[in-house]
Image (cartoon, rainbow, N blue to C red; front, top):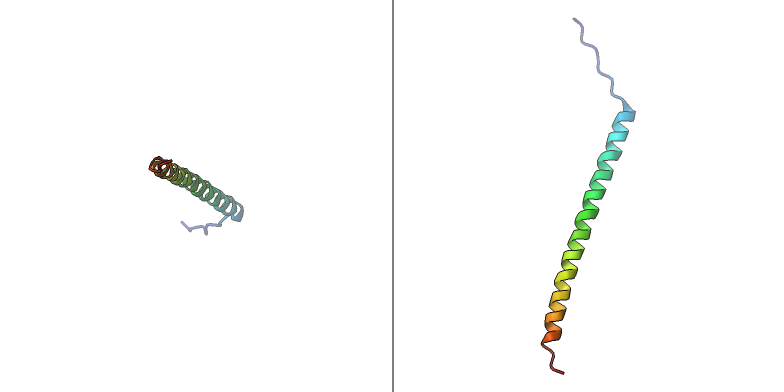
Length: 56
């Protein structure tokens, strides 16, 4: 009959916020590592190709 006012639990909110932050950090870290390895491979290939063009 009467609607009860919902109470928010600050502990649950804090735990959820920490979890979301940790997930975002992990995903960003993985993406950065993958990008660095991809760039590193491309740089190695370019360097080897350039070294192949040098006449000794």
